[in-house]
Length: 191
Image (cartoon, rainbow, N blue to C red; front, top):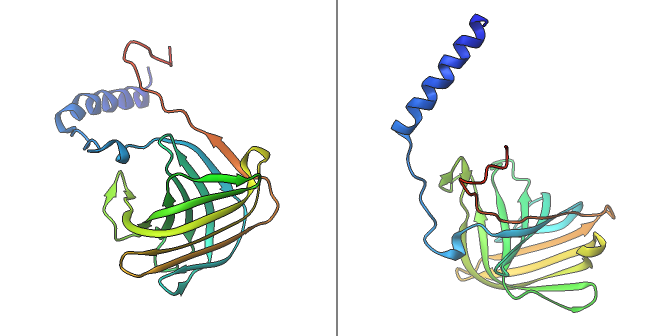
């Protein structure tokens, strides 16, 4: 065995033995609503004609759609804010519906606001939820991998207004279905 390999093995074993001594249990979300349950996400390519947060305009980096197993959905916008790389807003609601073939309507009941000033879990800022009213309209069809536009407007309980006008560049969306599974100690997927 080489000296380098032996040294790496000793370090790995030392860390393996030391980690249980300093390990902490992560806090478990207190309600089922707080547990992650995303079952679908869609990444859209295009431009934001308007993104406004409390009267302030921002360019956007990306727009995505997230849907949860419990029916909550989010249109999420990463803002191109030179003062805050973590500035993200999400128009969030439940009971979205498609009354016309290519139009999805999501009533908004909260805004999720993220910034570099938010508390972090595993290095990622946790968004603040602001009770809000509003609506998002998506023109397009996820099954066909085509979204033409997304428009959202909302106002939170403090009177702050939020707006999104997104137009696709025609590129098919990236759509992913996510299945949540529980790990089982008796079943090791790597064996």
